[in-house]
Length: 85
Image (cartoon, rainbow, N blue to C red; front, side, top):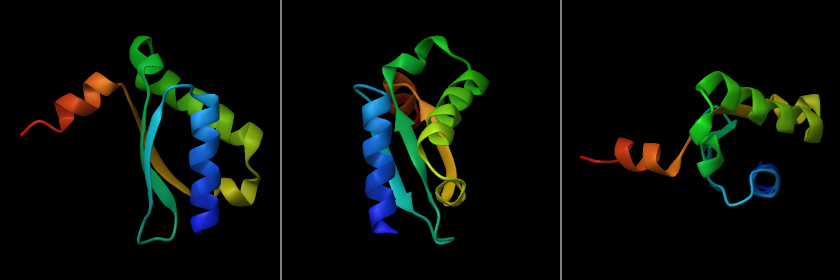
């Protein structure tokens, strides 16, 4: 599963230039987390996820996609705000 995590991380960095991904292997054995990219600023959540899943569909097999848990799409400002406490 570690190899898949590395593949997914590399794919996201390549397709979302300048992004940061914080992905981990969940207890379920699937990979999920955050994709943080300033390019999401002008998009609503539906469009962000459509763009993410288009990339995943074009670059991963169906079996690989079944290993993906939710990936939250956020801008750097949104993640900074969410982490304030």
